[in-house]
Amino acid sequence: MRRIAVMGAAGRMGKALIEAARQAPAARLAAAVGRPDSTLAGVDAGELAGLGRIGVALSGDLATVLDEFDVLIDFTHPTVTLKNLEICRRAGKAMVIGTTGFSVEERQQLSAAAGEIPIVFAANFSVGVNLCLKLLDTAARVLGEDADIEIIEAHHRHKVDAPSGTALRMGEVVASVLGRDLEKVAVYGREGQTGARARETIGFATVRAGDIVGDHTVLFAADGERVEITHKASSRMTFAKGAVRAALWLEGRVPALYDMQDVLALR
Ligand SMILES: NC(=O)C1=CN([C@@H]2O[C@H](COP(=O)(O)OP(=O)(O)OC[C@H]3O[C@@H](n4cnc5c(N)ncnc54)[C@H](OP(=O)(O)O)[C@@H]3O)[C@@H](O)[C@H]2O)C=CC1
Ligand SMILES: O=C(O)C1=N[C@H](C(=O)O)C[C@H](O)C1
Image 1: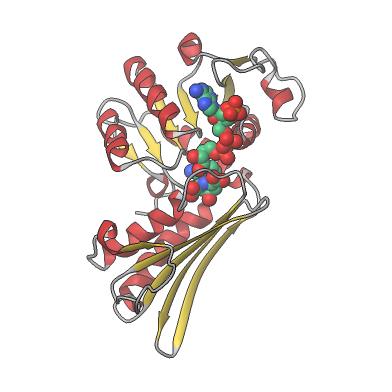
Image 2 (image 1 turned 180 degrees about the vertical axis):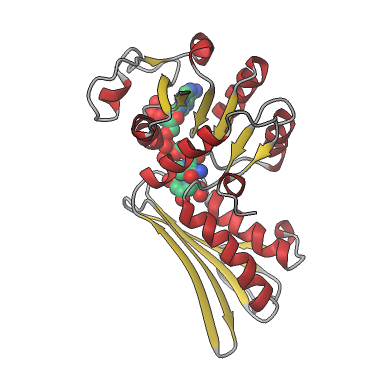
């Protein structure tokens, strides 16, 4: 039985992860961790997630529950995840990381730690988005040189980073196929006298509204035709189930930085 700890257990994804860990027959929710100063410390994690009592109390300190789990699932904030990364690296614990909004330097810290512990890091743990990444690879090969490429994403009003990690990953996949450097060709929103669209650019547009779980569209617009590849998530359980699947997949893996394409054997 794989012992799973959930960080950010009181958050939107934390609650979904508690439910997904409880549903997976090969997993056991062994620990749930929140902010050190959380007023919810000691509250039952099942109660937090609306599942009823499960006998796992919310802890405010990852270090105190280190002996209780095999793999930490962390969907929080970059600064929080990086602190946990260091604790897990020292303790030799595997990690599944779903947090988005890392800088280039912070991503290098993830890669460095993956030399010592196995990590699955993905901007999106849904099967559908990972299929879309494969479809995007093909679409970019077939259409990319002749089409203008724009990425449009929409999320709930509480999301704190933009563009979404998924939109950026989609941009990276397309740019890599076309031999473009995303840092040079990305355009993040447009306003005023922008001039005509430069051919090689990849545009990003962000919507934040209501309770949208997560919508992504990549538009390939050529002269005379358009192709749109769209994914719409309607429940956070799709991400949570993917993350628990990744936590189970990690068992027995050598230290390396894996992603959901590895877990789903999509490479
Ligand atoms: N890869 C994927 O498939 C997906 C990734 N995400 C990403 O996951 C992240 C979290 O999203 P979401 O759940 O919506 O956000 P929430 O804000 O709902 O959850 C974040 C949680 O982290 C907790 N937290 C903050 N600081 C600390 C700390 N110092 N120690 C422990 N816990 C802390 C927060 O506590 P408090 O409640 O007290 O503020 C909160 O419970 C985002 O980066 C988002 O983009 C989201 C969905 C899917
Ligand atoms: O914050 C969210 O909610 C989501 N974040 C991820 C991202 O930034 O891509 C994945 C998903 O779309 C939901």
